Image (cartoon, rainbow, N blue to C red; front, side):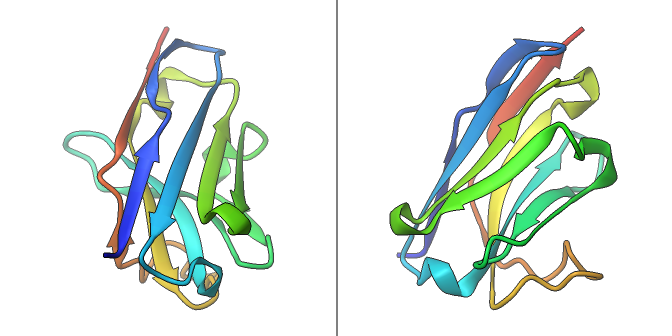
Length: 124
């Protein structure tokens, strides 16, 4: 069964940190581009960061320097370290996968495996 399960969300004050985790199963993890996305009510889902099987990463501009995406291929796990959190980072965060290499230029498209999400709330 193909599955992505996120964990690690919570409530923090502005300036705080959280580390999200995503456990993958049911597919060959090393053959997929992995990403983190987020969505708030009434807004479209937006890409946050992606990582290739070789460790190449890409971030949306608003999180560069604050968020770090990483993975442990041996554990089929994806992570998102979020530092210096801001109230505007408040959202449901989703882990996602797309088969093959990440496609930079169309960085946020083509993901067809999704987790159920984990809520991140940042208070001012």
